[in-house]
Image (cartoon, rainbow, N blue to C red):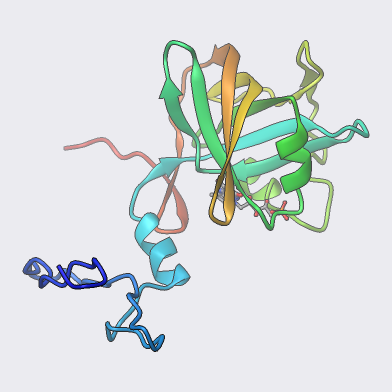
Length: 195
Ligand SMILES: Cc1cc2nc3c(=O)[nH]c(=O)nc-3n(C[C@H](O)[C@H](O)[C@H](O)COP(=O)(O)O)c2cc1C
C-alpha cells in the first residue's frame, strides 16, 4: 500500500488469451499510471459479455402519452417484499418521465419479439405504432403476448453515476410459455439447447 492509500501490488497473472485493462489511477500531476486504461467503450463491451434477456418498460406520462423503452438492465432484487430493478440513462430523453412515473410495467420479450425490441429504441417515430395496448388498473399501457410481465409501483430511485436505478415493487405478474430473446455482445439471439 502506498502513501495515497492505493494498492500498487502487481495484478494477478493472466490466463492464456485473457486481456487485462485497468481503471485509470492518476498521479498527483494528473497523468495516468497505466498504459492502457478502461474507457466507456471497453467497459460497455465487457459488460456485454454478461448475457441478459430483453424487456420493454412502459409507463404513462403526466400528459397521458404512452411511453416505452427497450432495456436489458432488469434484475430481480427481493422476494419479500417483491422488488425488481432496472436502470435508465440520465441522458435518455425519457429519463424525466420514467423517473416521475408512479407506476410502470416491464415486459420480458420472447425470442420471436426482436421487432418489439427494435421498435422501442426508435427515436424518430411513435414506438407503439400499431401495437394495441390495454391499460393496467393504474393506467400503464400493457403490451400483449410477452413471456412475462411485471406491473410495478415505483418504490425507490437511486442515483448511480450516469444512470438512475429504478426499484419497483411488483404488484402483479403475468406469464406465458415460450423461449426468451437474448442480448449478448451487443446482439440479439436466442438460447440454444446444450448437446
Ligand atoms: C438491448 C437493449 C438494451 C437496452 N437497455 C437499456 C437500459 O437498460 N437502460 C437504458 O437507459 N437504455 C437502454 N437501452 C437504450 C434505450 O433503449 C435507448 O437509449 C432509448 O430507447 C433511446 O431513446 P431515449 O432517448 O429515450 O434514450 C437499451 C437498448 C437496447 C437495444
